[in-house]
Length: 136
Image 1 (cartoon, helix red, strand yellow):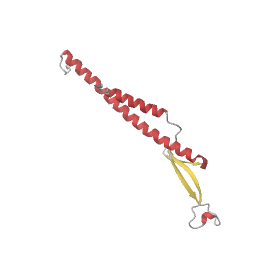
Image 2: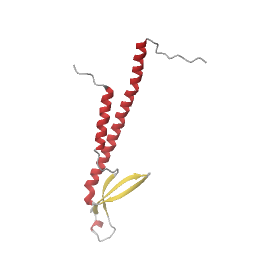
Image 3: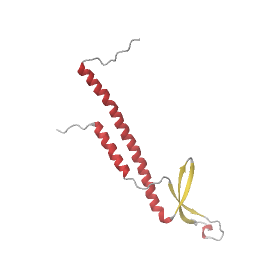
Image 4: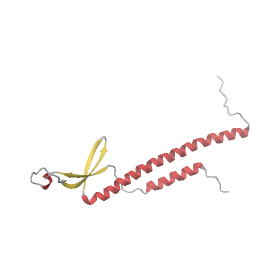
């Protein structure tokens, strides 16, 4: 018959697994990558013709910094790398949330252990579970 799994050890294992996954996170950056087409404003340019998409695509990365939106132009040769960095950032955020949840479960489980151990110790000694009140 297999031994029951210690719940605290299970939570520690999950936490350690998530920490190891976070250590594997590569280069990352927050933001949204947007593909843009623009019109230059010259009346004789192809972009001024009806139905034309305009010049582009050009790519820009936007994200908030101190409550303000910051935009960076991303060169065409770096678009795929930037997408991977954004994906890695999302992976990092997801792993971080899972790590917090696992750690919280572990902390909650550890809080229950001393109470159970104290109750068992009190029962062993045959004492009551109520603590005595100090007299004034």
